Amino acid sequence: MEPPSASAQRPGTLGASTVVGRQTGTIDANAYMARIQAENAAGQCFICELADEQTTRTRETVAYRDEYCIVFFPPYPRLYAYCLLAPRRHATNVVSDFTEDDYLALQLRVHRLGRVLTEITPTERLYVFSFGSMQGVAHVHWHLAPLPPGTPFREQQFAAVDKLDYLVIEKAELDELAQRVGAGMAALAHPTIGPSS
Image (cartoon, rainbow, N blue to C red; front, side):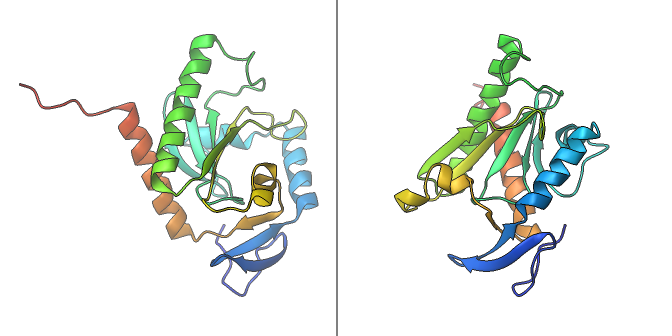
């Protein structure tokens, strides 16, 4: 999905404006919820589609995949570098669908992703949370949302992520950000070994 020009509105949104030097759009919450619930009712899982390289959608931008997880950027990010991490296999219960070892493997990746995000974007606080719904996005996933330094207190916490406004990030910038996240994740998964003596 191509981002709108500075004067255009993104299809499916109510409007667009500019905040802190970045263009923003506004999600049509009713249309978004209707689409998510219709996909769910039809047995579609967009996270499973993203996890499979053969069916990856273009609405989201994939930054990293390994044997356990997928990391991707949503089409409507509330904060810069806001991304999601999900298990590659379909799971709907955030704890009980995993063995302890599988859960710890996923949380290790959440930790690595948090390290990468806070290294590549200024972050006052990194929010990590799991939302979802059996009636909407049932596939377990974690949100990682870097709160920019200096964000007024009233705009922090839930207010930072529970809003209809999102950042419009040009595709080239998002692709570069995805590449940096993917490279950072790969580097943490396979740290270099010092020179042999």
